[in-house]
Length: 385
Image 1 (spheres, helix red, strand yellow):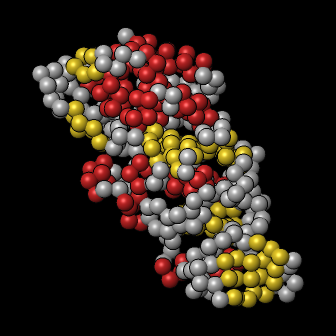
Image 2 (cartoon, one colour; image 1 turned 90 degrees about the vertical axis):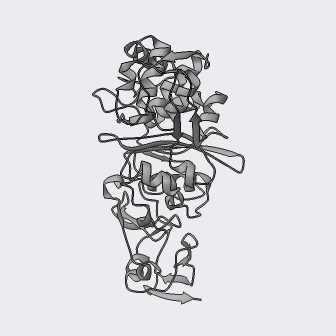
Image 3 (tube, helix red, strand yellow; image 1 turned 90 degrees about the horizontal axis):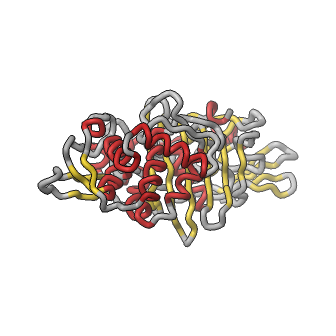
């Protein structure tokens, strides 16, 4: 599979100024499990286990890769937790934080037993710092008990038409029997997006709950990284556990188009998300997570080495026909044979600036500094500067 074949390589600036591009052959990953309806651009290789790209403006699925595969989904679980809270309403209702909520562990909003907070404040704690404690507190507020709330989650999921999802908690920590599919997560987030409070909260970068006689102060920072560095992202929910890998549900809006990108089981936080947003928005401008504020990077994600993320990085693998490729993340284009062999031994072309096209027996690829032409009849190359 393309997911297993794809890998990330670091290349020197000198070596990468060679490279490369998309050809006229079928795009990588043309598998039975993949559906691609965006024909304007080729689909990128997917590093994660499942992906779904949906154009909410038109109601069209642009790409689906293993969309019905049941996978652990980490804190994207909290999209369903939020939905039940929003559907019950009464966001000014207060709840006393239980010891059960305050001690759940994992990512939290640092609740203490005995504090009293509104459901609205707890939704901020749920969706910004991905508070597991907020998830349990909301579950107890709405469902009476955490266990009953989980029953409510599964019942609501079934009514939405979800067929590959089952919840065992309101937070998403790794547990047996806790899983979802990309298509089911789309159903859930579409339901969330009908609520104005959800849209407002998911796009908030920081939120401060001042101290009072009933609660401690809470300074909340949104951990949905693309919200900080990808233009047009308006929010949603990431997740990460040992079993789930990196997951994300990202909503973005550009030029009056709203798109949703869902990824499960990614090896890093940004490659698939950026590639699929570029694909969905038909805009291959380079966006790097290096633009995340230092405070966010150092305090929340010290293990992420953002300075290794570069437009000259590429993914390697083989397509469904066994043909090797390189996919240059910074431009959204592939390099395939015969160009791949030539570019391995020549440099100075710059990054690709167009898709490869054929005219008769000649294949043509544009680069930043030249145009590379392959003459099929003679199996030779020529350059046009």
